[in-house]
Length: 362
Image (tube, rainbow, N blue to C red; front, side, top):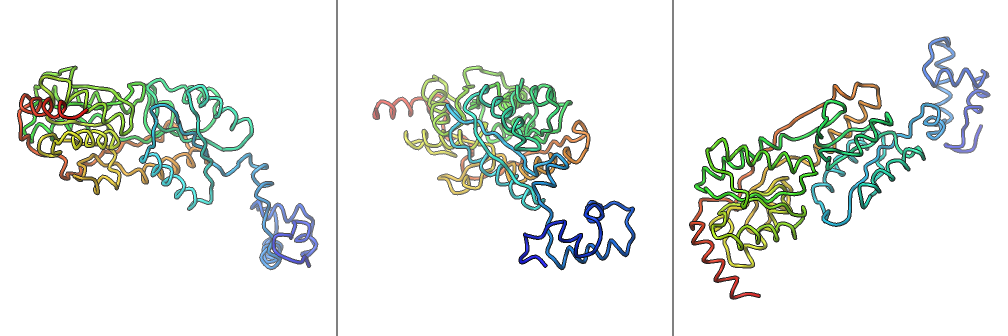
């Protein structure tokens, strides 16, 4: 008998039972043309000897690596993305439950993203891809669709009927956000957005505009600014809207929590009380928002849940389900904290205060 677990081969099992190697293989692969008595003897020998089929050999045979891939965009303007970190954690947790692995790598440009995906496919490193931060015209979706390689997206694109996706109703969330801010008494509502190449950024801007239209509030392009989706972008966006306009907004609706944090930092630097002088609302519902000063009002979407759902959706695609039938749209939930409230100053009074404080500081 072999010396230890892990060294047992299929030949050892066959010799132990006194059958052909092919018979053992057919039992292990659930063929039904083997007698029940022989099947039981073989399965008992497998257990007694501690035989474990080679994962590598098994995967080669069925053309699977039991590994999913995600390529994260990095570089200028990407910054640290706390939502993405939780999203990946959600993917990893779901795959761990399913006995699968996750390969995470990065790309520093759109071209490098496609090159990286091509390389991983050519080297048979992954069975499928999870795409996040989808673009309106996303080259990754076009490439993988052309290749016929499995993928799922977190977020939609301009052609959502062609693939599996999970998304949040961004337009509704931002229309609801405008309605909530207006109900507090604000009529000048600023929008801190991101690159409109990103589908979610475009949807959230559309929701902001739709919310204004539904309330009969005239849209003022001067109240919109597009920035990098990080704290620096939020600081720059708040400065552009609050410090450079004669009639600044008294409320800022931000497309990410990171932008909202930057906006709060600007307000604090110049002595504005967030929640009174200026309302700031974010989007992502990240846990640390509760511990900011003041705690951040935000639209919540669970990054962990989103990661888990797209991971399981991709496994369904790999198991043969029609990708075009796998679509899910969820809603974000407004979590009210202390960063929103009724305006304590008119836009003109807010502009006067800021001019005075900006003149006092470099």
